[in-house]
Image 1 (tube, one colour):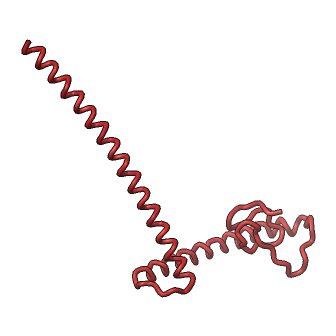
Image 2 (image 1 turned 180 degrees about the vertical axis):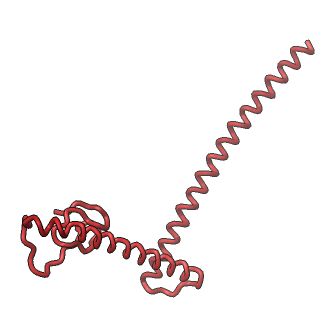
Image 3 (image 1 turned 120 degrees about the vertical axis):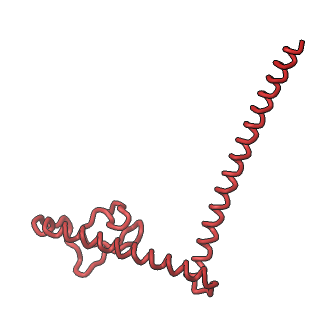
Length: 135
């Protein structure tokens, strides 16, 4: 009988460990979901604060410094996009000179992307900034 008691006790112990492992996994999953929700809220707070910065509102020094960093990153992005447009324009210039234009562009007419609003050289089929197909 003592042997059977030990086997029963061991089986109960294994069952308890399985339950605690499952409960721990559920709680760890819940923690990860809550952490993810916090991260999303932090992103929304950041977007809200940056919106205040763009509207000209006074911000605490740390927030203003971070917004200035974002402004710098946005300027670098715009510079890179402009460089892409310049490169693509330079690449297409020899081909455009060799082939007659399908539709003559009005003198001085400016083209803009319908998707992102970036200025486009005449005749571009795709936006150099966002890649959207142009009509």
